[in-house]
Length: 120
Image 1 (tube, rainbow, N blue to C red):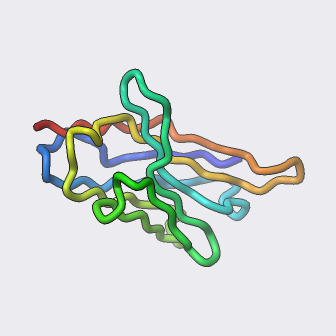
Image 2 (image 1 turned 90 degrees about the horizontal axis):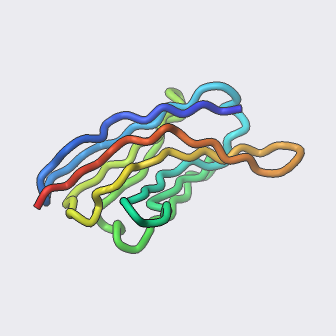
């Protein structure tokens, strides 16, 4: 199984930037993609961005396109989320996700989450 640890959350003013990091350990060779999700109070968890292993193709939720950038450092088993032009609507707990391949099908692993608060 994969273990994930996030860092980099905090409080920032609207228009500011933050960079989240997520480091994977354990069965990292079986990871097929990693990504970031977020959950605001009273709302469902939603996808923010994903990046696949191998080719590194990325996918973004519409509201963050052009403002957020997901990247990875394979040597460090770390994925990053650079968040620019932050808005109060981006306030949420951000969770790192990894999808592993297995004989029984894909397995999702989650980090404990990191709080991002954007003040107006």
